Image (cartoon, rainbow, N blue to C red):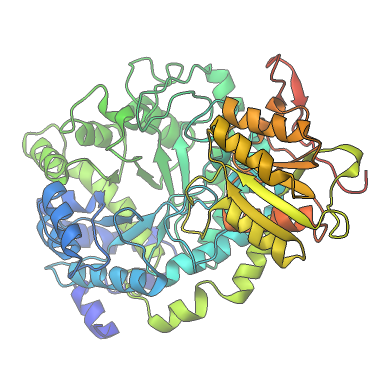
Length: 595
């Protein structure tokens, strides 16, 4: 690894002292001097944040080399940096960037080395989606926390701040300096297919408080850039913008009272970056353009009315929501004209990079416009001390990632989120004397965040550790009649049945109803959306975990066993199944073992 002296030399003198003075804006004259020496292609490259396949910056596996050649036209991350001079790289599990903490740290160091060795080399801002809950890119042995809706059920600003601090410290230790979290969307639509449990809840003020707390955790001692997403608000849609083009029908007044509240709080908290949404919002811009490409929304409202002058990053430019109206060559240009700074993950980097370059050469974009975004991006890199500290150390990884203290903190926080919705005749907590033999069955979706999974296995193992004899049986999200029969047969030998529901389907409903009808005590867990409980009115005990990650399932097991009290309270209302206009369980509802 290059020495600190080599690193400072590689940043061309002017950049070396950027992080030495107090505020980012105090460094603007040095940053502008640095920008003035950059070539136009280098400026264009700094605006892009791109995926790349492989566990190594210079020696990825052959399959990843092949993927890079097919999608990017280069073999490695180092070649991509040399060719396009990208300012950021985003890590994904499916791109094989995140095998284990030491490997991730080595990849980050390789990326920084490749960039700093270029003429006028700059440090790279490495980012990822580490929301916790159902969206994570860095899995075990890193510390994984409950997701946003679970944190909303816990309702603790202190816990949210601790999540940001601990998760941020671990990300920084492996070289990730920008996290695309927290989600600031207010989830008021139970049918929302893309946000749902990724939101803190349906109360904008509660969401705002927890967003601000996480921002403070990430950007305080951890010194990792947090990102509030998805502006101007993605919480009321029944369309997934990965695959379609959602329309938000809120009035301007409703937007002010609902969607805008958490973003205003994030800005007050000093949020480093805000991510755009690929949604239509006619009350804010009647053009039919997605918010990502809307100057009235990004420059008029976000910059002008809300007074935000930090980095604006697009959601992935490969998503259908931003590609519906314009071609891939127009999208990055229009995003910059709208007020965006960072262009995230275009389908074709070559098409997007050349489109921006040609737009400047043809006069559609000015070089001064690029310089505005470059200044914001370099301010952020300076604030994160990337110019001084681009590299991470193996000892720092060992000392920081997945420590016993961090894991214990995650377990304690998770215990405060489990929500008890139904407990007829005080079935819970289960006693080892009367319900020692347990059958754990239900949906087994793939692990969402690199945890061990599957859910039935995690629950059975945790309950066995607590003194029960628990057997796991996966019945899936759509159990057949034969699987239902198998589950009923297995349940005959159990003292009680634990069943996980996942966005409950008709087949899951049949399974649970037949288990209840068999006379066995049934404890159901909604392992994703808490709305499942409305579909199963005969279940004698129902818990909401808000995710099927290990940390949340282990906490639920302790609640089932009486080793922890259920303390979570619903952060969203649950409507009646037979009359969605009426609320079955309101926000703030949750039972305890004392009543």
